[in-house]
Length: 403
Image (tube, rainbow, N blue to C red; front, side, top):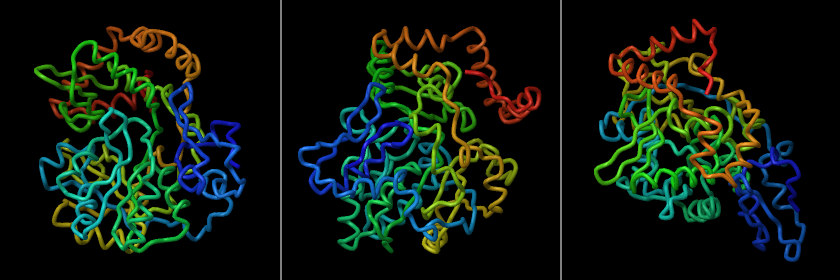
C-alpha cells in the first residue's frame, strides 16, 4: 500500500492510481492544490502494484539499460509561420505529432479542459494539435491517460505521449514493457506550479474582464521576452515575468511542487525517445535561426527518434549540434529549483486571504518592476534583448533579477 509521509516523495504522476485493479486509489488535492494518492484501506488488497510503478519508490528496480544517452542533438524551427507563432519555442513537437497522426496514431499532451483545468488529453487530427501549443505553467491532471495509452498500443496504434519527465517515468513504469509504436517526448521542466494558484489567479483576473483565451507564453514582444496573455472581447492583457503575479510566484520558487525541489529525474540520461526545450541562446549555434521567433532544442536518444526527425525534416529548419554544446549550461536539466523561504506562508495566506491582496503582499509590483518591463519591451523591439541580458548577467556576476 502506497503511503506518502513526505510530500517530496510524490511527483503526482498518477501511475499508482492507474495501476490499481480495484480502483482503491484516488488522487486528492491537498491545501496547496497538488494531488496525492489516498488509498481506500477497505478495498485495498496490499498487492504492491502501486509501489512497483511509483517512479520514486521503484527507482532501484528500474533496469539501468532502459536509460539512454542522447545520440544526436538538434536545433529546430517549424517552417509553418502559424505553427511557429502559436508554439512556445520552435514548434518541433508539432512536427513530431504530425508524423504520428499521419501514421493513423494518437497524440497525448497537456491542454485546457472545458472547466479550465489543464488535463492530459488525446487528439487524432492535425487540426487539433493547436491545443498542445504554448506551455502550460501548471501541473496537468493525467486521469486515465496511461491506461488509455496502453489500450491503444495493444490495439496496434501509434501513440505519441508528451509531458514532464516525471509524467513520462510514470507512464513507462505503468506500461511495464517497451512498445515499438510508442513515441515518448519529455519537456525539460523547471517545476510544476499549483492548479489551485492558477484557479485563484484566473478568478482574480476575471474580475476585470471575462477573457476566453489564456497563454502562459505569448510571443507578442518576441520569443526572448514572452508574456502571460489574456484576451476576450475587445480587451487584452499582456504582462511579463516582472509584472504578472502568476509568473512571479512560479519563477521565485513559491508556486512549485515540493517534489520539484528535489527532483529525481534531472539528468541528460533518460528513458524517453526525445527531450525538448527552449533555446534562447540560439546565437551561440546558428545566426540564421536567431530571428526571435522561437527555437526548440532536441535530444534524440533512439533509432525511432532519429527516423522521425529525418522524415519531418521538410517541416522543420533542422540544424545538428554537438550534444555537449546542447546541454552545456542548461541547469534545468540537472539542477532542482530552490524553494522560496516564504513558500509555506504564501500557501497558508492564499487559502484565507483575498487572492489579489495575497499576491500583492508577497509580490508587490513596484516602480522598479514597471521600469524593468519597459526596458525589456524596448530591448525586444530593438532586437537587443539578448545582448542586454548578457550584459546584465556579466555585471551581476551571473545572478538573475530577484523576484
